[in-house]
Image 1 (cartoon, protein in one colour):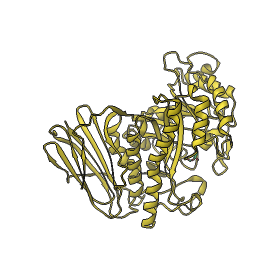
Image 2 (cartoon, rainbow, N blue to C red):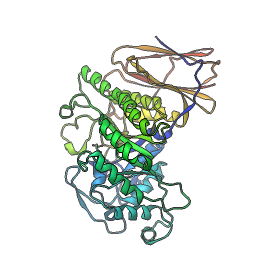
Image 3 (cartoon, protein in one colour):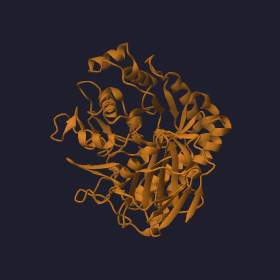
Image 4 (cartoon, rainbow, N blue to C red):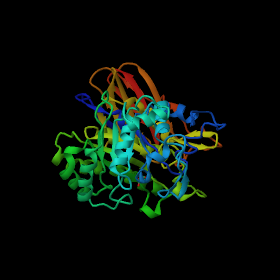
Length: 481
Ligand code: AHR
């Protein structure tokens, strides 16, 4: 049994709600079919946006949603996707499909409002222009002017509210093959013209394109040359079971693929730490936040699906990886200001899978459902980097303790005991996500195979709580102080 003594610990650092952000890109059925069905669809919708998906996502209290990519953002020209005439383009980023542009800027902001999330816009730096960016920002945020008039003509009298923008995406890779010196100079130029046009709103929070996984040189160079012009630096890290071109499947996998995925996921802790050290050289107080705006399990696409659609099932293994990653983010809450799991619907490690009018919630969805209680709570303790299979987050908010624990072991039960300073009050919430099989998942034939269950195994004695966990088990309990 692991014992964690919290008698002398007090929550000082806030676990930002933005650590539970999401990401949705125009690829596969991530938008079309998954979110957007069109106003004339027989699937219930509000202004073209499917209502079942909205209701499910509202429940997660998603704080922020990144859009339109990813890779796609660097071929996206926003003028094609506003107004009554939409201009289809070829989605050369993902499978050369015809992108209808039916879901554009106004639809995205409408979707954000429907689910209660703040928008995070990724600007096209690679194939766009500064002029295109300034017009876009004016269209979205300005109360007056030529672009505001266009927005009004399109039915939106008031400016939309926008705070977060990313300038470029993975500019070191397929989006530009840039060197960090070149990107840093380009970023300095572009950000100069990126304005908030709404005088009632705070200035834009500008995110510069950060490193690929462990490219520490990128972080050094971009920070050295542009730190005074950024509020955030992005980081992308995906969990893999093997090398990039040998990705394992989401279901029907070997036990060793559980371990290798967990190893890959736990490296997030190391990458954050190492990039944080480089950032601190230029920004010791962490004014600039690390923005992990793409993370999650990247597995082989499902058989008989288009590889460019990144459609994968989602099992209890993914839930364990998500909980472990959220625990890592809580550990680094001083530095990590936002994180966006890839991606919300039908793509990679999604919350939701849809098939025509059907919708299922994934095990990862239920992790976010249990972890939402940590949003903006004060961290007391988080993660566990001593190689132990248990990872956790303990926080306090509104005179309550929130405790989440994940047993990452495929085979072993484990128990954890937390000792608090004062006597604990009554228990308010006790849920568990568990499955017997390593690849247990929900399907369209069996949509409720895995869902949250009541967790009754806890033991409370004065100032201690003991939580016995089964193998591959995630629990959250909330207690009065
Ligand atoms: O999330 C899928 C893709 O992964 C994104 O488009 C890209 O930024 C990253 O390589």
